[in-house]
Length: 208
Image (tube, rainbow, N blue to C red):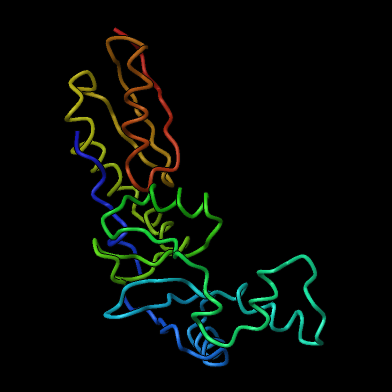
């Protein structure tokens, strides 16, 4: 059975604003405001991602503007004194490859507590950016499109599902009909749930 064709490259934003490591503090703030984003990739050379500078990296400058030392927080001290992207950025950058699955990108975001990921190719060059909202785009697929993929891309590869009915309403899939045995239900449900855009799977099955 083939896997979902959707990868990060299918949903990512291809037009990306980035900065070099020498970009000054104020320029970074201006770009964040202009492009309405919360973080920027920092590039070196021909476009290799070496870090990410975010709003969180910039805030110590305001937090400690009165000269109060961020006691016990050496990272905060460095950020408060930083003047360029290279000094401010978090490194190494948390990135994802363009051919990664959407599930893999979602897991990276969850584990690393980030909202956006620079998308890179095999040698680390910037290809785009993928955000949480980008990953949710698959849930905009129509019910008809989801049903068609389940029939042609999932059930046809599972002989035991021959003759099953498929209905999709608001992304919720209902499979109806009969199957040889109840023990096959989890296998079929898991295969259907793997289709991008499926919100839930409900089974209305009898057993021969």
